[in-house]
Image (cartoon, rainbow, N blue to C red; front, top):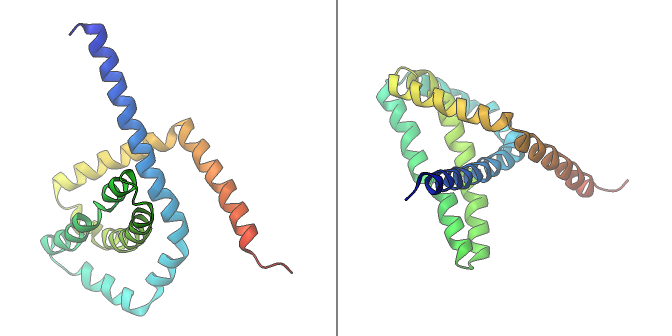
Length: 167
């Protein structure tokens, strides 16, 4: 294979991975913005405050298990839903992605928030998290991302206006 073909192939693979990453993160962005009020209410509950204190007192390995196990169970929801969608199981795929993302983003995001201080004591975790944040910051700095966010906000505003009861 000559260098020109390798370079084209490398750029094509990077473009496909970039597109996949943007779609993947866009789904999370959509669900995160819709779930923000629910997450605030959940965290205001006394039970959640006690859970936060309990998690904060746990050893770092317990905190790691509390975060990783639900994440490992729930993260494959999107790829499985995409697979179902590709095989024309549209209803099942939609239900799976909506329910899975709601559970994942409320449970795993809250668990991460609660366990972050203990998790950052692992050098490998802090290194990976730093790279993860840098990747997210890079994607969010792209003009494509800000354009998608602006369109999403405009669409969300229209939907909210349609759902408001007429006076």
